[in-house]
Length: 209
Image (cartoon, rainbow, N blue to C red; front, side, top):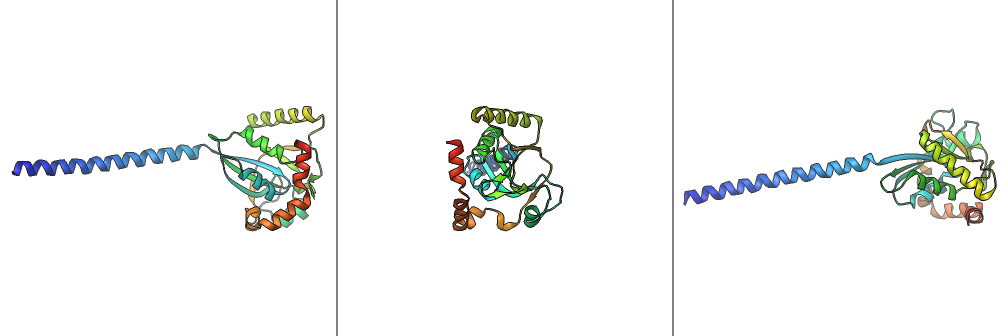
């Protein structure tokens, strides 16, 4: 009888430690997968006029993890919205796109960018004119620059027109004020009225469709 009880206790201990070991292994695998997922995350920067509209355009794309409105390309550190719009800071309204490279490619995001801007307007975008609203593709590597240049040639050949979108080497991104973030969701009616007044959809449809 004592022998049976002893065997039962040993068996229970074995089951307990096996369960603990399995849980640890699952946590390790889960952590490893999470680390692998994060390692796939990359960032890309585009300026296409109003950053509210650019956020909306990219948030629809599968594989895009996050979009943030901000400023880039200029010389002033930590600029404010008023400084970017009304002073010559050199910055343009920019969106920082974080994406999962295992789900969406840089080429795909670049294509989305082109389809949401007027690449032939050197004065700004749609109803927003001025240096802060110029269209810019920021590149972070030689490979990205080559891809961008190739896409520019394709567009120029297709439309028989000069693409005036600027190609700038990325340096620093400054996050815009909180009220600009996710504006198209937080202030949907005002945003809709603004976009309609700018005839953004109409212009894009005329160019690309």
